[in-house]
Length: 170
Image (cartoon, rainbow, N blue to C red):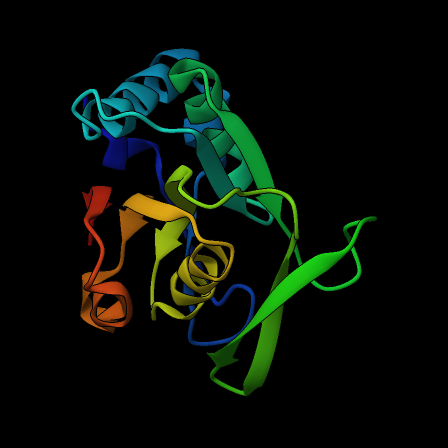
């Protein structure tokens, strides 16, 4: 099965000049979704994972499924002011400024083996912020795991000190 066949291109979304990779058809097909989950799971080669962190919001889909399959905790990482407890935050660059992500201060304990998951590795800003949050709390990143990588944007350069896996590369 070609997982790429379940990724739909949407021209000029969310703004003109952007070719958006829509994963909705993949999520909608139970066989393709399970195949993709298995590819992401198999990339871990039986490593011990204590926590899976997923970035808001598309990182939640496969992040939660991976956590369940790994019998690990799931940690949602969200935009500012969306989490109800005390948080740490990490800022990252956008084309037009900066943004930040937040995680509960007690989500990861020192020494936890952590899988960092998001739907796409593009410029690497979000991925770097996720790694910074894990490192700040003393977690050990086992792998940075993505549904897809837009390799022409060189995002892996920002997180190259970590093992990186993408199920699909463009």
